[in-house]
Length: 172
Image 1: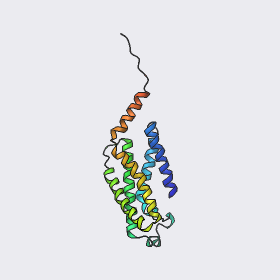
Image 2: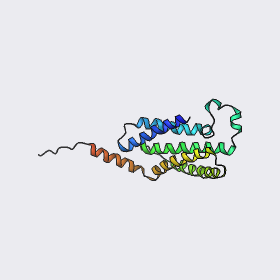
Image 3: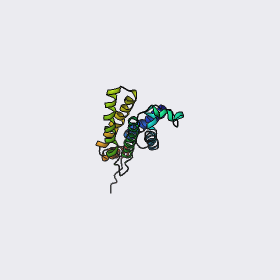
Image 4: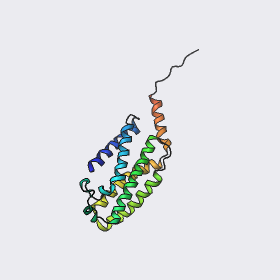
């Protein structure tokens, strides 16, 4: 599970940097990696953040050692991470109707607050894992949320004007 997250995250980071600096050639990789990362967090967060392996996902014994609050917190965290990642994807692709941030960022803040309180009380490794993802995705999501979508399209327009060859003026 960690390899899946690391692979999709690395591909998404490379595609985001490429899109912001050089152009739209890696949009397919950006779309697949970010959508995959969003789906991974949304559907597998409850087993990933609670240390359950895929082989034992259907065993009752695995879930008995996990408290209800920790299970619900990891599910809410996965939904918040997934929604925020989709918001970043919508901003990068300049797609309309991007209201994902208004759902994802407050949910990440809420879960992060409770994860920090639980970490302070228990010093459990699972909460460090959660807080790391909240900080990374939250900072990236907040940066895109606070920047208007026009900032990215204006940058692309300036880049396109620089790449056009100069036109010759005809004398009549």
